[in-house]
Length: 396
Image 1 (tube, rainbow, N blue to C red):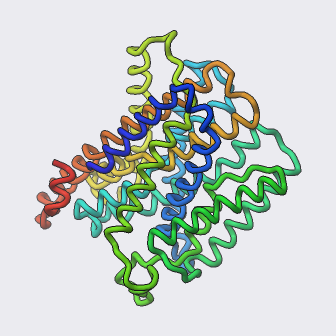
Image 2 (cartoon, helix red, strand yellow):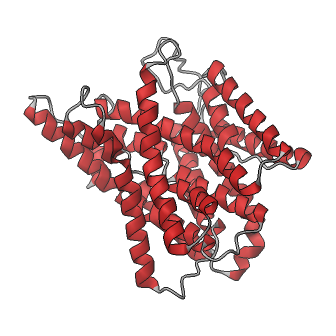
């Protein structure tokens, strides 16, 4: 919980620093570093992606539920921006997509630390969160076309995207390379450099979201310790120091949040006042979370009402991917020259503030999940969930 709160504080500090005129001179460097760090995060998300290609049918319902759970907060946030800030429908849909993706990294870490890894809620949340993030990454292409228009260059970009997806599907977790965090950081730099070169050669901007996610899907992750193919040396040559890996991971993700805040446009809410801004942030945060309650209406044959409620609340955490969507939106608006349109920068800033608030609430979401599952366990005479010393410290 301390780490999540730190990310929220860093995001807000970055947004405060973005108000300084001197930051404008550093925007290109900030944007480059932010994309490299985003690539690192998306590679990790891709490494968590798992699918049983021998039984694809079982994922059909899960994918539809994940799409619905992403679509409801997305469309409500987009409608909110359209109604209150009077920006175009395409612009509203692009910015509003920030509300859709659950933070897979934060969700998995917090639920596992809370001792929930063996529960139905964790296993189902794992599937839905990854499909949620995948759906968000895929939708960025048509949303980009809505703003930039249908051109041959964008058609070519679509072909590249399809090729990446096919490679990720047919060769999922096929690539045996070191998977320690230092190696993943190197892969992230490679992804960013490849996207930069693609942009330079073709004059078509390829965001790092999909290539990084696709590369993560290709890499054989070593997190499944129970699998027969688990290789304890897959992370890289011994000896490696897991403490230093954790330090690097915290540094990259913390820096990403700080730089992401600095990359967002200056906050321009002078005309509406701080009270109205707070109201907007609270309403947006409510809408983006209540929209994740779609699983409540599903899985009635698999789980109890408490388990389904716990699953819905477990999908509330947001973070890196949502910030990534705002940053990609910012890049697209720079390309179209529409960032100066009234309401655009305000909507992006509100999205950032809503994500910061949601990060602060993550610990309460996980506590609610634990209490729901323990209540359900008590009624069915199951053993209650044990948090462990580390989780008690994080969630107290």
